[in-house]
Image 1 (tube, helix red, strand yellow):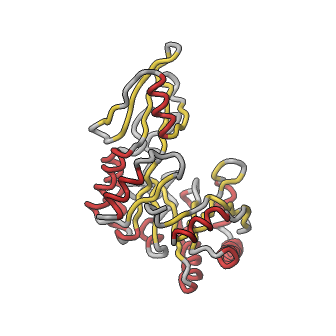
Image 2 (spheres, rainbow, N blue to C red):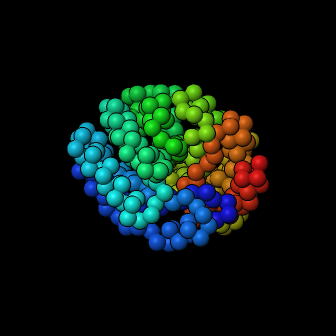
Image 3 (cartoon, rainbow, N blue to C red):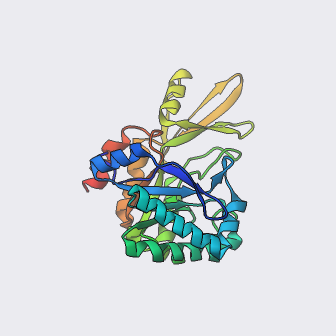
Length: 294
C-alpha cells in the first residue's frame, strides 16, 4: 500500500441504457481508507465475458442514455464514497469517436465541480489513426482536455493469435509516450505497466497468459534461464514440450526499471499497473526507490 496512490476495483459494467451492474468492493474501500489512497470506481463495458462493442456503441450514440449514465455514476460515487471514476470502455467502433468525446465532456462537466476525479483507460497508439478498429475512437487531444488523468494501456504489443514478442517493448512504449505528450498535458499521462506475460505455442501462435510467478516456475520446470532481451528490454525464454517449441515473454522488476526511466525522462505523471496480484513482488521496491522517492 505504501507504494500505491490509487486503487481502481474492476467492479461495474454499464449497458446500452447507461445502467450499472456490479458490486462495491468493501475490501478495496477499507484498504484505501486505511492507507489514504484514492479509490476510483472502474466502469467497463464487459458484458457476456467480452468488451461488448454493440452495447457501448448504443450507449454513446444515445444522448438520453449518456445522460442516464452520468446520473447513475454520480449516484454510485455519492453512495459509496468513491473519489472518482475510471472509464474503461474498450472495443469501441472508430465511427463513435465524436460521441465518446461528447460522453467524456458531459461526465467531466458534471463530476469535476463536485470534486470527483475523472480518469480514462485508453488504447496505446503512437499516431492518430482515426479508422483503427481498436484505437480510432479515442481522440487523445479532445479527451485529454476533459479528464484528470489518462491510463494508456501500453501492454499487449504482442498478443495471442499473433507472433510471439515482448508484451511492451521499450521503443514502442517510448513512441506512445512521445505521441501522447503532444496531445495531452504530460502530468495527466500514466503508462500502463503489465504484471503478466504470455506463453506462446510457436507452431500455432496460440498463447496463454501467465503471471510472473508462473513464468518463473515454468522456466524452472523446463530447466531454462530467463534472459533480459537488451533490444526490447523485456524478459524471455524458450522451451520444448512434446516436440513443440514454446516462447515466453514476461515482465519483471528489471523491465519495470527501464519503463520508469521513460517516466522520468519524459516528465509524465506516472504508471498504472494491470493488475494487482500478477506482478513480480520486486515491483514495489523499484517503485518506491525510482518513482516515489525520486
